[in-house]
Picture 1 (cartoon, rainbow, N blue to C red):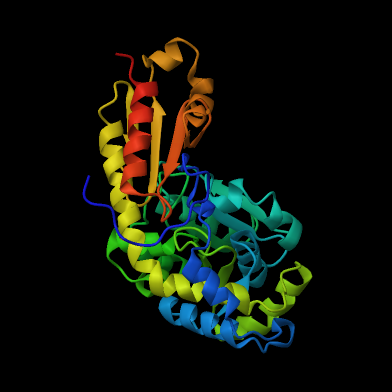
Picture 2 (cartoon, rainbow, N blue to C red):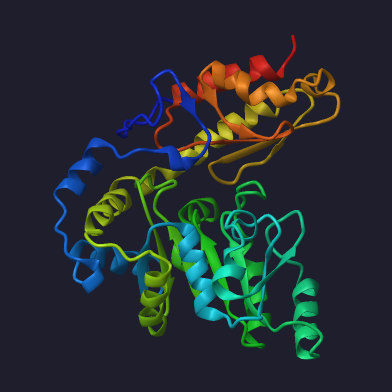
Length: 362
């Protein structure tokens, strides 16, 4: 590999562990800790935390929306977006493998009284015919009104791929004709910008609301922001309050995020480079299929004929790797490794050697 970058890193696991479970495992570096310690804070319950106000202004500008609101998690941000734009009884269309569908514990039904309808396809975008059918059924009174369409960029469970922006724009045109808004779960939107060469604002433009996560590739410890039109802000503050998301001296966390925007955002390209390097080597393993990475997520699958499947040892693969100091996630056949700012070239090289030792039977 090329020479390691000289960016400052912090260890999110013991020194002898290569933690590729997620980009959420990063920890604040010393400079970020200093920024947090020196933050000028107020009380966000009264709306007077200046550091938080600066973060919200800056993120809104980057994403091209009127305003942004800090919340503790991306899940809360997504749930607020649904609540803001739907009525009880509405249908919300999203991918069957989306975070909103799979990882938010039925929050859309509990918080907003809506029904999630999942479209199932290999890529993260719905077929136009699927959306047209939902619109037609609603117009004919045979199904619930289509209140919102939610997309995810990059889409985690579809392989960390970025959305095809031309298809997004086509979908937006169709939905706009029926007055149906779109929400973007852009937890990794900055990764999508690196992958596509488009700015976050360009990627976000067709969407009424956008969720931005701070604690993944950016490496901040806590928080997401819901970006939205200004007329949503007052109601969004009320929704955030009853969901339990209003905090006080939030500027401490905002300072970490502002540091990340200045110092960490340019390094996302390095995470992508390392992911591509690892994927290229995994592709050399017999009976292993790698989803070509577009970002920092490397998904790979054991295919029939792989010795781990033949010997019924695939379920032990993750645990055996962990014993050797390489941490990934997976379910016995499909696995994920995620590069992030706390991972160096040397650690990726170590991970590859351990992966090969466990995947290839010489």
